[in-house]
Image (cartoon, rainbow, N blue to C red; front, side, top):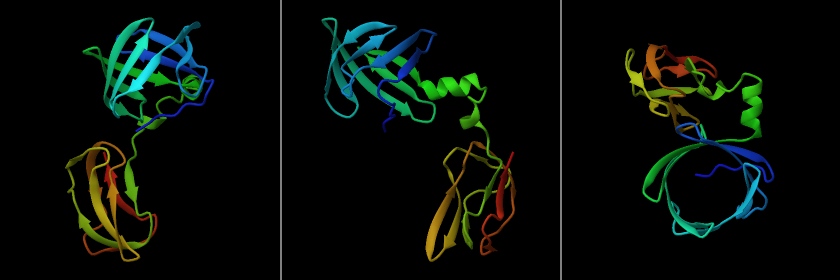
Length: 178
């Protein structure tokens, strides 16, 4: 998984614990740029998809990517054996914050509607059960294809408006969450 940022755009890097850095890369190789308006360059060698060797200011760093959360742009890294959580923000995040809209991605969706006409083949959950983001909830057959509808957010199932074997129309309410 990768997170892409426009070249020449300023990134804000926030390390868990409060340290914040303003980073701007000056080329597509990400080998030079500035951190807090101070120029830097480094050599980065990719060992594999999760491991990198970095040399900066005559110091060697071993970096391992433990986890990437693309939704929140959070990186869980191990640098020379030390675990670090790093969150990146770009100019769009800054604009959303300025407009007071930074929590849009975490807003909870309260229901699932049929994306197309079809037939309910299977319900994976019951009323009162909890669900995690991305968990399979219902299987809908449409045009001889099975479509697994997944939970758009974490929550508890409040109501199931259909049962196995029901024919549904596009935009028909299927599941409600608390």
